[in-house]
Length: 409
Image: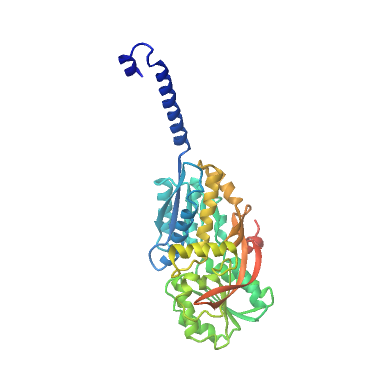
């Protein structure tokens, strides 16, 4: 306050000086406290927003935006989350590895998430282990993934969870089955899981085929399956346009009229693709951890919020719910650390994550495996109102990953 003393009589501003100094010091302390508390947590999101599987990335994008809008005020004061999105273009391990490295090294993210594809998640494993960057998986579903890095936690599902249980269900009704799956790790998991569930309960396998992931001739494969005259066909293909092509091949070759029902995982009848399938999937039995028409208050609220935000043209499927719950897990880790995130503390929080009120039902992470524990529903594709939907018929509660149960360390 030297300028005041220059122009004022001695002592004239002494009380004022003290008051102003106290005020300015108080403001400075307040600003300092805000600056110390202010924290931007950076989340790198790797998904497919272009190419033939862009609809899957769109589900993730919509779910992330919906969650962050709904929970904008749920973080500690001064803390914000920045989402940095990158497009892997589909199952491209080299691209996913490069994007992961850029997000870690250049963008200095605190968390990674997304990862629709198992090969992409596997490619990222060494990088996230070395950098100690927690990766919250929104979809990639091969059981082995979480064994590849202690910094993986999965909020989606494993193919063993639905495929094993639909195998058990099918064995109660049919004796002879044929399997057709996409030729990549999740397809192999689904095949092995269904076969175990089916044959351990008295079923017999009459044939198997693994189909290319890109542009398979589904009509030829479906005709081969029909010629084997099984009592039931099990399938697993990647969600998206591939599943629509598969269902149309099943319908065009009239397998239902031939008395050969179709069962599988929910990948083949995701809600966002059902709108493109016509009547082909009617009667399809699937096992999965989510249905848009599941009769749960949290699910009804989620679907209503989605439709307010995006309309009814593109409904939410299991990939959207995996993304929505993954964001809740990340927000939980950030809140519990008050924005000052440490990777090992984050992993401890994530490994103990629980949510009794997810749209899919109660979920938890198994601390021993960092994999999700959740209900699996046996569902039938039916017409509900003006559109097709997967109606839940039976509930298998609190399912851990069966592969890890059968293959303990």
